[in-house]
Amino acid sequence: MSKQSISLNDCVWVYGEKIYTTLRNAQTEIDALKERGLATVMLKNTRDPAELEQLRRRLWQNDAHVILTRLHPSEMQDLQPIFRERKNFSVIYDDWWIMPHWFTLEARHVIFRKYNGIAIRLGKAPWTNHAPPLWYNPFFPDARSNYALVASALRLPLLAVSPVVNLANFFRRQRESTAPDRFLYFPFSIKAEDVPLQNDVPYQYDFANIWSVCGIFMMRDPFAPFHHTFANLYADRLKMTKLLLSTAHSFYHTRKKNWTDYTHLIRSTRYAVASGGLCDKFNPNFLECACLGTPMIGRSVPFDAPWFDECLFPVDLFNLTAADCKPVFEAALERQPALREKCLNWRDRLLHMYSPHTLLDVLQTQIDGHPVPPGYLKVDFKTTAS
Image (cartoon, rainbow, N blue to C red; front, side):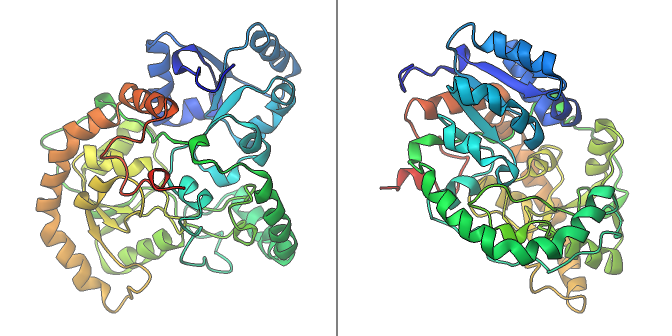
């Protein structure tokens, strides 16, 4: 297959049932593929030899390009034997730093939902400008889980061996082609049914943190520093939550029961806490809040979504202290009506820009050699890469 011949309409899209059933934006995206009549394969259990053999037989029936999306790292690892032999695939990454590097090395295109993956690979940005704390409290609300307990126990031992792994990662990075045309941008999608507006939802809370304050990851990608394995990359969001709990009428809740409860909670709060974590990633939650008419308070992101800054009350979380945060929160509440109006003004444009069908067209445009259209990025380093 020639490099110019990839058409998304002719690809086979392979995705995982686990992510499809748990993430609303995954359902929105995959359902759009089906609406277009594209070939899709849902994997229910990659540990089942019979299911893997069925997939292998299907993929070997023709030379269609395969796109792997919405798969956990363990699921990707289970698929490696099939694609080691067949090749001819591309990958779509959400949190790219946790994915097995073999797929990045072998993929025709590496498609990032968060532009920091492209910026870092092109040498235009560091992984982070703020080091995470050495350790975190796995017993803090929302951090409590078996995974968090195991990760906290392994944090220091893995930190001790990180110099050796980081040295190995230097050589692993040399093996990867960082040609800009390999890297594509494909943000999270949304549709109007995901974010219904209701006119008379009374405010129950001034501030709400609706998302996790515990972001702990295994750094499998060599472009992410291994010494940040199992460090809390959401330390800034955790700090903001603690400040709100101590000084403001805030509601701390991250375990949404269902999508209806989740969207109702967003609509019934004046501000949602916003943070892409210490790695400055763009979250789909920012898009959901803006379309629901709820402004955000916290940190912006450096590369994605220029519109996001118009829906945000910016706060310097790294220098904000308990002594000076109260007037900051009061100023935010004064500006809330104006920022809410900006969110609502952006709603229709965002629903069009981030429609799954629009984004599929944007992705195809990039495959055909054109840049990301205006409005999605603050800076596109691919257009200036030598």
